[in-house]
Amino acid sequence: MDTIIAKIQNKDSDEAIYMKAAQILKNGGLVAFPTETVYGLGANALDEMASAKIYAAKRRPSDNPLIVHIADVADLDKLAVDIDDRVKKTIKAFWPGPLTMILKKNQCIPDSITGGLDTVAIRMPSHFVAANLIKKSKIFIAAPSANISGRPSPTRAKHVIEDMNGIIDMIIEHDEVDIGVESTIIDLSVDKPVILRPGYITKAQLEQVLGEVFVDPAIQGNIADGVIPKAPGMKYKHYAPKAKVIIVDGKDNDVIDVINCLTKDKQLEGLKVGIMTCSENMKKYKADVVFDIGSRYDEASNARTLFEALRLFDEKKVDYVYSESFPTNNVGAAVMNRLIKAAGHTILHV
Ligand code: TXA
Ligand code: MG
Image: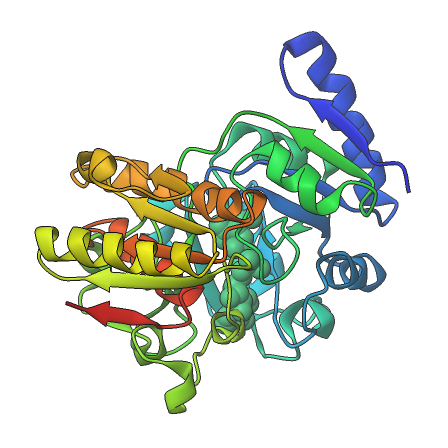
């Protein structure tokens, strides 16, 4: 199929882009668009045939439910039931923004969107393109990240083009996203709030609004150990480049020495090596590709760059990626969560 690729750049031409995209969505087609977290792959959430196309385009397992995106809080009770005070407080504090809530679903939501669960994931994005698209198409948009399943989520339009050109109806291009990792997911369908996926909104921020918040143990654990995550998507090996990723953790100088040593060994075997580092250590490494994901004092910049780095290693066809670990005070917790998954939990403590 020919994919329409259209860039948001000025008021005059933008309107025509939104109108075209809205028409495609209303006719059951697929449109990729930027959000503040990552690019999403959208379809009409209440149209079962349309959502089936998302699973096919992404090659996504059908038991992995989708997030429904809305542009107006007033629409929430069309999609979910049991909207209590906790939900209202959470909305007031964090919407629109990078937070997804799991709520008991309204019967109008097709089972195919929720993987047969009796709950639904809902998010109100703050990105103006996402918000405009939802408003102008007058539908709710089901949207996973716009990557082929298992690949790093797209933070730039060119990543969406790499994965989806020729497969979906339209790609709306805009700048690099602001955040770079997917939304925090909090389950409010249960008595005690539980974080199912870490993101830009931290546990501490949520606790200021909700009191004690729990974290799904599977987020830290190794799924091979038999801990099954509550968010079905979190059980898949995700975000992984084709290379084998190994995290090396320890004191700075030890980490640098070990990574340089391992790199030399692999290169002697004729293999290509990539290294992921903070900018402070950039010059201390020698490898085929050295990629710095920002200062170790700037977790936001680490988040914005992580998926781009993982994609670049693929492009350069490296066989091994050695990565430092990164601070986890804020959005860094989400960065390390994605990195540990990319590494299939392979962490070398030195
Ligand atoms: O930032 C984001 O959330 C992006 C942008 C596009 O909005 N979307 C995104 O969607 O990351 P996706 O499909 O890549 O991840 C959705 C996650 C999956 O892990 C899925 O299993 C979980 O949300 N999820 C969806 N519905 C759920 C439910 N009812 N209960 C538990 N987990 C759910
Ligand atoms: Mg995803």
